[in-house]
Image 1 (tube, rainbow, N blue to C red):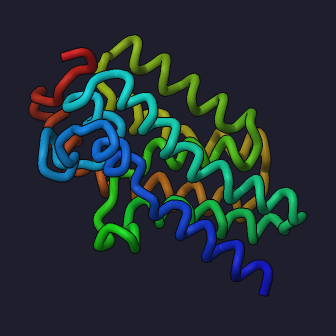
Image 2 (image 1 turned 90 degrees about the horizontal axis):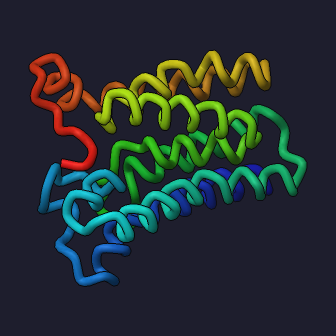
Image 3 (image 1 turned 90 degrees about the vertical axis):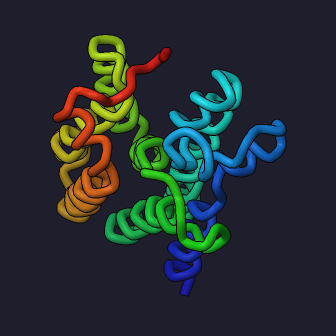
Length: 194
């Protein structure tokens, strides 16, 4: 029963849209109707600037961190931790509070990785930062870091359940980034800072 409550709580936590709440509180346009129409930190950066984007990024990450911290405190098993991480991630993508229309999930996925064990999040985050500095394209940085995330998870915490969770997250992220992938191929994807 406790495990089911933990997983449900993770989904509900993930369903809280940081981008929509931050934009509303800061008097900015709804991110679902401006820019890329995606309620995520990169789009908030476009329409609201660095401060709003930083708050959104933190909010989206913490949605992944907190449910897993609760799982650790309750001594949840590895399969339950994997389910909790997946639930938080899916909550962000398909939020019950916002008509099941959420963001693409990169920041929440990173939060899940930090929540599992901070070295995992640190490694994946470092890959993202390196790529962002080199290519200056947020989506490409996210795709490369998440493509490598299953390997990072396996090297740091080799558990089949966590590997399966991360592979599922990675595949879903690539699916959600289909428009970005098309733009990357066409050479029209926007760069950070523009």
